[in-house]
Image (cartoon, rainbow, N blue to C red):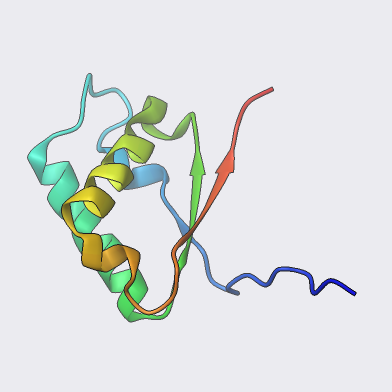
Length: 89
């Protein structure tokens, strides 16, 4: 019998990680803010992050990727990071 996957009870919604919705692109300040948010989530035991391709018109996913690529220690913080993604049909 297969054990179903488990997920955290708390999930960080990442809609705001890409900066203002109407901005053309994200900035270094957006990345710095996202780093703080992701680190705080991980320090609190949150390892599941919710994304959708429409969050910040795709900027939220790009910023989250920047945060993980700049800080490899975040990827192996306490537990593997789980990213949930929802795409438009």
